[in-house]
Length: 500
Ligand code: GLA
Image (cartoon, rainbow, N blue to C red; front, side, top):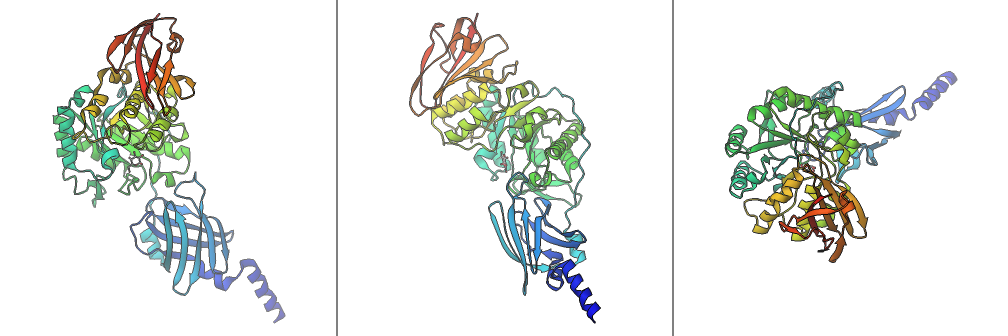
């Protein structure tokens, strides 16, 4: 008897409080919900080494529990906040009479649910099936995007409320406004077009896009090209179906429909591809799949400028890569991106461009001077110029800002050099961009709240003296000896200089 008691005591010591903790082990089912992050089930396992567990979700697949502690009927653990870069959040799960009571947070979602016990069959049914990544490889340049891509994108103005009819009308207005002939060629559908996958796994558009091939034909018939959007993760940022597990199949669908451009947005992939190397392979996978279609398709990488994407964007087949999170339609956002989060000029050039995000000009959140700064700065940066406004209803001032041929020529200059800040003096900044014909674009930016007088020297442009000076926005030659301009608050003076 004494020996038996001793044995029981030893077992209890070895496994903690067996009667209670054992209740936690197993499969637990979340109540059915489509809400972010699509929680499916939780698995708590007790093995020799201790406890481990995962939370399975539509967005991020199997999220590992970290720092898991089990005490009696309570499990407490850390869950990545959607993204292994951010501080994790603590979740708790407690056995109660009604089931397992789970409390936790992920992004802006608070979870407080009671889970019921699942079976082995549930675990199979709800399993997240992981898809393999390719072996590392380097894609060769394909000769596309020799100058920064130009076009229009639906996101900034329409978000996910975009449809076939609007896209067609935008295409018509790009033509009738003259913007197509000014260079804006791509009509890009951003997030929000996706429906469900068919039984064959092929992605289908939603009801707002009855026929993608017909839409592409319509846009092509107007001398324009057309773009589409997806994610390497299972869900896009707006919660639509992503390409995870269907990368090759989706690339084939996009090519078969006649698309010429793909924006590939990390979104839920940031919770699945947990290292920089995995993110790169996920982008390579789509790069290879697009090449395999045989159709020339511009490939826009959108992973918010992480992991020095400019140094490897071309290798995965990218023609442009975002350098930042999302732009917003106000001066502080535009300026902080354009002046300070615009990517390394060494990475940009014919075939591959730093992308400080799409334009907000015409959306109403900035003054005319601020929008003039926006497009002037993007041109100085050799940035992709993707209109983000409703070109069906723009004002003459907006159109004039967007279609100025001398500004566009600076952006599209075949030398493909990204401009740099030469000097910063208080609110004043002088930026220079060398151009193919030997001239230099020089921008005098005033980041201050009041008008300032700004001056430059020929040396700012790399010249000993100036022989010809054009005020780009005014469109007229000015006195080559002039060095000082009054620049409005948040405004710019853009010059094109020839020198000796
Ligand atoms: C992310 C991107 C945006 C846009 C949205 C769509 O936020 O950075 O440019 O594509 O997703 O959901």
